[in-house]
Image 1 (cartoon, helix red, strand yellow):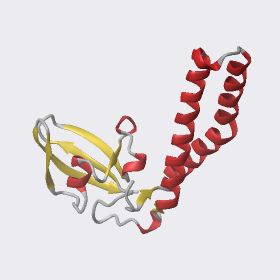
Image 2 (cartoon, rainbow, N blue to C red; image 1 turned 90 degrees about the vertical axis):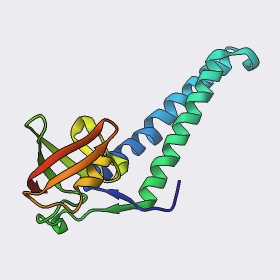
Image 3 (tube, helix red, strand yellow; image 1 turned 180 degrees about the horizontal axis):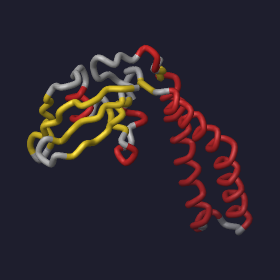
Image 4 (cartoon, rainbow, N blue to C red; image 1 turned 90 degrees about the horizontal axis):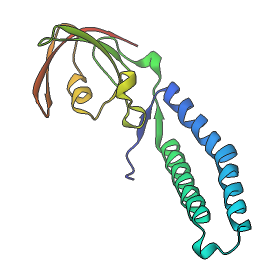
Length: 158
């Protein structure tokens, strides 16, 4: 992981902190108990339950380390400082897809909390990157694998 700062909203920070707490206090104990039970079966050299539990333990510890690194590099957005004049990280932007004549609302977030299913797109993704710096009324061309999408910026809020 690079030394690049990770931009988070307060909501994104809370989500990461909650997941980290869950992993440290609940999942670690569950996995440790599974390892203990697997050892009780006897010979661990050919014990698939033991191997699975150790693999799960490694995954949990890897996720904990990743979340802790994210928190160390996090820069928390002050939502009151987000401009409503142009699209920034933290902006909620309503756009109109000019080809399909449909309105879509995106929240521009840092890559660590991007979730397209919730309408949260990364400032580093093609759509997010193209919308940054745009103003209401502008037409933005977004280069995507299938070609170019034209969006009209309808509204910027926080």
